[in-house]
Image 1 (cartoon, helix red, strand yellow):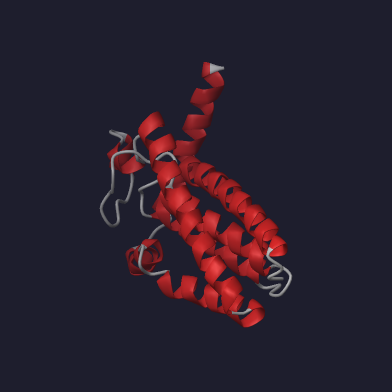
Image 2 (cartoon, one colour):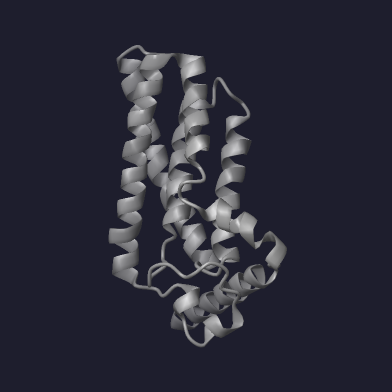
Length: 193
């Protein structure tokens, strides 16, 4: 079992280094922007406006509340139940591995498993897919592309391993789906849909 874990860790390092080393200075600002926490606020607003357009203000307000709950859960769980427990160093903090990386825009906190960016985006995306899937067929590909882009940017910048992003995405999908199921039950019970 230990041998298998070592092999998986080696693959994770190799894939992450490959993605990171594909970078070029001319596109670095784009991926820094993609990883920015405030960058996506207009996107969140657009998604909530889509909910308002299709379902009205009551469901949009409930969706805003569900989004806040989802992001609070994904952020807190990714940090307190994973980063602080597993304490896996970010690639940019792991010596001598970090000597082979392009550290594009600083390193962030010490621990990286799981990626909070990936957890948050996947959580919000899965929640909104639950809410919008019947009215907006483009919601699924747009939100999935957004998750992939943010996750890729974290590896590109050298602040997360591929495994951090994949695990964070799975965690976020689980949390967002859980909140989405509760949201759907609640809106049916309240006859908002």
